[in-house]
Length: 387
Image (cartoon, rainbow, N blue to C red; front, side):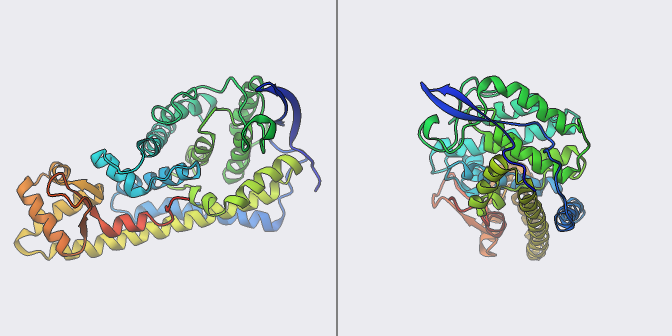
């Protein structure tokens, strides 16, 4: 099917030179999408994978415990796509000790992402609709401090931005001019709320993600907000109870293909190829999350059994172990506060856990030490090597 460009090019003046800015046509696509049997099967497989992911909470002894670190993994990955060098261990260490050993702006940026995601999810749970207002609130938390704090946090941009290149004139892509942001976002919000037509959740998330990235309504942080939007929409649509699907690792691993699909949609209207790519990503990512949850359940059960055989110290040892499951990188005082065990006892229990190979000490210091639940952090860190 031949569609051509999915919007119009406008000649605008930006930074003193003429540029061609792209203004996307409102969703849904015209002519209508051609969902053949093969593409429908890929969308159905994605929805089935989301159902399995949503039911994995039955396996988990504490869903919040899993989400604590899984959300942080997503924050690391999504920020890495934008160029940060922080790892999951850096973030957990920063939250535990505020001395990450990496550029402070990097880890602050990742920490802000966690805050933005948690705030946005809480608003969705309270029944607040996916809207421009919600996205501005998320953006305000995302750029609250560190890099980007001077890029109008919580506000749509009032000047031209661009993607790639050193200026608008040599950019790879120039989004809509500022005066087009409000009407574009209003039209997108209507589509999200099934006006003019009801759209199935996975298909809707695929279409909305591209449209948001094309509008690029903020001066900075658009990619991170756009990736968050996918998960928030699936939760708001009732497909997921908890924010357990994150596509940043898939986009990171298929980065060139991801950007090629966005360009093809804008220039040739090839929505179908993008939708298939997106559906495959949802299926793969949901399956990987289920696998990770199952591996962690097995890890916790095996290690708890080893800890429980600790003789007369087993009770205190289990309490410290459970505190480490909640915060897999933590100081002895934090573990004492969370476990209700005295500091001297916590220190003895940590030595026992080190002897079992469950815990390692990270700092090499004699004071103000940090301890890591080694295998837990290793499993969650898979795929998070900086680009």
